Length: 261
Ligand SMILES: C[S@@+](CC[C@H](N)C(=O)[O-])C[C@H]1O[C@@H](n2cnc3c(N)ncnc32)[C@H](O)[C@@H]1O
Image 1: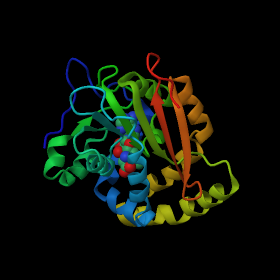
Image 2 (image 1 turned 135 degrees about the horizontal axis):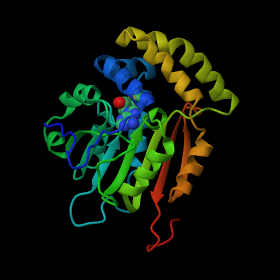
Image 3 (image 1 turned 90 degrees about the vertical axis):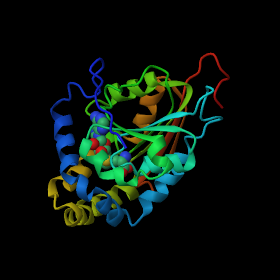
C-alpha cells in the first residue's frame, strides 16, 4: 500500500488556516483510538448509517466512461467508508482523501486483498482537491464537512471535481433545529460522548469539540440550499435515528443531459 502525497506541481495540502491546523492536530492525536471510540459511542449504528449512505452513490450508473468509476471518499479518516464503498462498488477506483496522515495510516491495516489495489489513500485538503475538473463519478463524505474551515469553498471544489451527473453523498451531524434531536444531542453529546471518547483515546478536548462543532455548523436545510447554489440538483435529505444524523445526496447538474427527476 502506498500513501500518495503532494505532487510538487500541485500541492494537495496548501495554506491550511489556523482552524484547519487545530483540527488536523486533533485528529492526529486521536487517530490511534478513533475506531474504538466510534464503535463504543455509536454501538455500531455508524456502520449501518455508512452502509445505507454509500448505497446512495449509485446513480443511474456509477461511471460515465469506459474505465472503472472513480470515487472519492473525502475526509476519509481511518477509511471505514472507503472499505464500504469498495464493498458495494468493487470495480471502482476509490481515493481515500484526508489531510491527517495519521488518520489514514490508522486505517491502512484494513486494506487487504483487492481493497489494497482499488483504494488509494491520499493526503489532501478538502479546500484544494488534487483532482482534475469533472474527473470524479462520485464523492462520499462522512462526518467531515462539519470540520472544514470554509464550507462554501469545499462545496465549490466538490462541484468542480464531479462530472455532470456525478453523485455527492454526505453523512453528517447537522445543527438540530427540532426539539427531539436537540434534546438527544444535548444529553448524549455533552455527557456520554466526551466520557466514552476520553476512555477510548485519553483525549478530552477532541470529544468536547464534537458537540461544539455541531452547535456551530449549518442546519441541514441551509446545507441543502448551499448545494443548490453550487450547481447540485435533486438534493435529498433524510433524517437518521430520529434526526441524530442526516444523509444528504445530490447530483451534479448536467446541463446537456436529461433533467434530474
Ligand atoms: C470525524 S472524522 C470522519 C472520518 C471518517 N469519514 C469516518 O466517518 O469515520 C473527520 C475527518 O475529516 C478530516 N478533515 C477535517 N478537515 C479536513 C480538511 N479540510 N481536508 C481534509 N480532511 C479533513 C479529519 O482529519 C478527520 O479524519
